[in-house]
Image (cartoon, rainbow, N blue to C red; front, side, top):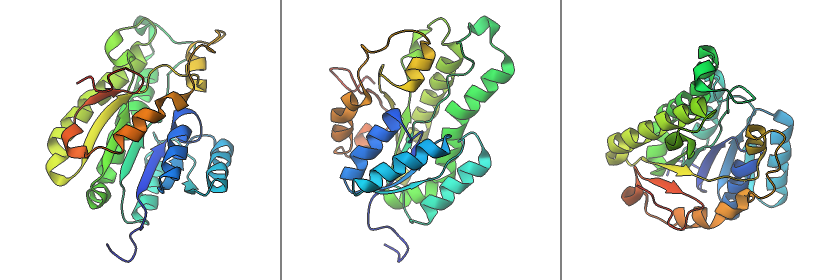
Length: 244
């Protein structure tokens, strides 16, 4: 361990200011992780970081859009300052145009933006953080959705971006395992979050569980050796977490 390497495990969580990202951040803080969070809403991110610090966590917030290369560079620099990365949680996503459109009417430029945030940004972060993930023998968790395999009307743009991310994840797992970088995908399931409410505007989603329902899964996951699970797909709310 070099002089500049954190003595704590380090996690970078995109989309960490609310919902699932913040729930996982709170769980990791309790496990002693040094957290770097990012989100587009600077005020909400600052509030999330303040809350984690009040609970005794070590957290830094860097507001911005992961689709912006300059912002990704800032995230890489923040991780580099700690000298290691043990967990990269690519949680940030965009639904695309709202209300959600049929794929037959989807503007190509809108699809490019969805792919930029949901597919290309996670890949670019993994590429930029490779050496630090190796130092931490790190785990990459890419968040996916049942829309990646469902073919649901109106979900085509979002689903395509997640389907591409799943293939990217399996490929990276095959390519990087020998270097000590492990990659999985996790479908967290339907939850009572703002993103889910945006997808179902005007509907009552109070029957959906809060993101805390996934905490047993995250506790189990962080207790696993990463090499045997790399390249696999998990469902955080299923009776059987591993699906492939």
